[in-house]
Image (cartoon, rainbow, N blue to C red):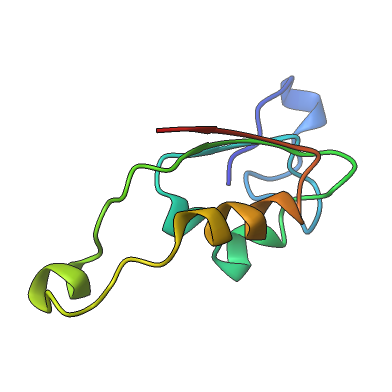
Length: 88
């Protein structure tokens, strides 16, 4: 979580709950973690999410682990933001 703005408007580098204006998610699995979802606000946050299936380390070590349904992951993000722009 990063704050960008004039020096006098930034009181810390971490965002509080619901304070994110935008989220750039290069990993859909990372986007839907509770720590990230709590930073978003349905009336405030726009999310740009890559839905490319990037396996976790556990998925690489255990080929029987299935990647979660991407549409459901995006739905989890949609509930927390104003707009989701997903790219494949």
